[in-house]
Image 1: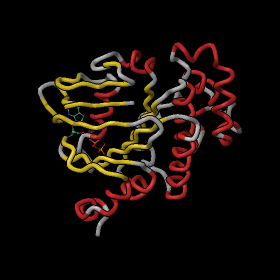
Image 2: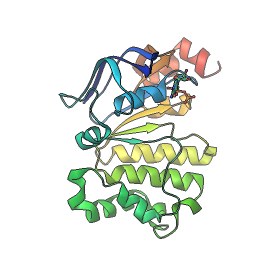
Image 3: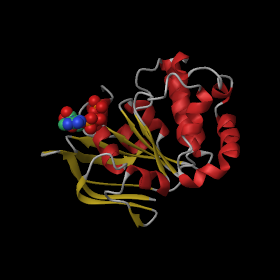
Image 4: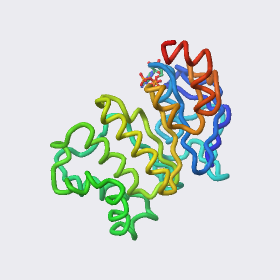
Amino acid sequence: MLKVTNLTSGYGKTQVLNRLNFEVNAGEIVTVIGANGAGKTTTLKALCGAIPVTEGTVEFEGVDLTNHTAAQIVDAGITMIPEGRQLFPSFTVKDNLLMGSYKRAARPIVKDKLDEVLQIFPRVKERLSQFAGSLSGGEQQMVAIARGMMADPKLLVFDEPSLGLSPLLVQQMFDVIRNVTSHGVTVLLVEQNVFRTLRLADRGYVLENGTIVRAGTGQELLNDPHVKRAYLGH
Ligand code: ATP
């Protein structure tokens, strides 16, 4: 579904990513794990059109999306849930959700889509008329995911969804991510919470200093001596 070949990118003259290769098949949960500064967020920015790709290609469903605009990438079916929520705090939850349906093809079906999304997120449904800024951090993160679903994505891309959440909420977040895949959405997940992420993911890639150093199933990576030593503390 998503095929990234020799992806090279960075900020101005600073190259951060060096020829990354990875792919995501339809229906999978795929993760990219790595330490602070490894280049995880940069990878997602390059994929989603926020920074230029200087070498390599991004293909989605056989179409070359390299260096397309963020709007074209959303229209193709890739929606990113950004790190740190980024809701409109003084708008209601409902208005925030409606703003998610900016993908052109999603507009005619907004009402149906809202009903469908609220079925997946009953807690969000209870808070539709509340200002987004008055929700707890965990609730805001759920609204951010629900808003992403409003764009009717084929691939949902998460940037560290567990960041700043309490352990209980982290578990709920991972349950929600599994749940969206049962609604036909494929997931690419960037995370620092390596243990839980690898347990959830079908496959994963380990990113270090802008290069992929390991690839395998979630279970293979959990058993990998380097992953154990560097990320799991044993
Ligand atoms: P974290 O888990 O801390 O968010 P990350 O793996 O997502 O880390 P990135 O944010 O992709 O890492 O950063 C990778 C490298 O790119 C870092 O060395 C960082 O300092 C650098 N970098 C990030 N954003 C910029 C920017 N806007 N301009 C210049 N360098 C940047």
